[in-house]
Image 1 (cartoon, rainbow, N blue to C red):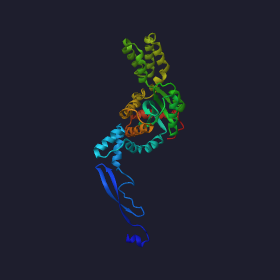
Image 2: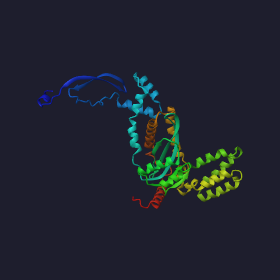
Image 3: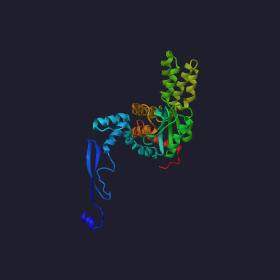
Length: 358
């Protein structure tokens, strides 16, 4: 301090204050923290007012991501460290994720996507009462064959107008050129998709269509009827698929006229996948890829029963989506890595979007 005084700097040591710090090794009590009279000194060991090291916060977030309710996390920490944490404190720790959620939801997206999948699932949210609200998911496979969750959107009931807002958001974040949209037969969704991406094709999920038809077929006919349906969407090419449908129609129309008519009305969009390389079929003739993803989200959300608010849902969805994207961001989806498939998709992009500059 003599040097400081000689230089005319009026500051000096001013004893210590005491701080408790929760660490991975337990609670460290009564740490002596040096201080100066001007209050300028700050240790580099941790931030001002920090009571927990980064490891504990990360552990809390990981437990929360795994679907553990805040009360259970609080009990776990108390059992490990002997220090009581309220569910509110746990919630405050996980709220640090919300800044990441905001950045993730507004991040720029790629310009080209070979496939965009759309699907929704319902979660229970507490507002004035507990009710089911939809989470809309958009997932894409880019031109290099990598799959990622593009966005999730929480709240309300699923409708074509809700999906219009989702698609508008994708466009605002940079998506311009799409070859194919894959989703179920929600009324109006195909129209909303074509409004956003008029040059893209639509593939209605074949598995959804089979599931919706199956309960309407009499028990004694189910096996034969479904076997005949498989000859349609398992045919080697579109012409053979159309011929198989004609046989199906001739055989079953009198007994199930409404079901046959329903298939006929959607046949073009149910068979769109025949216009794409056969190697891609398993990835595009059904929306199963995004439904499998939804199962993971449901598994993470299930232990929490009804969630207190939208922020609680968004925190879990973001943490799970980030993990999903990190994993699949390094894997080319089966059927998209073949050089001949890449050439074919590139030709389709160039034909539909000739203005695109490589």
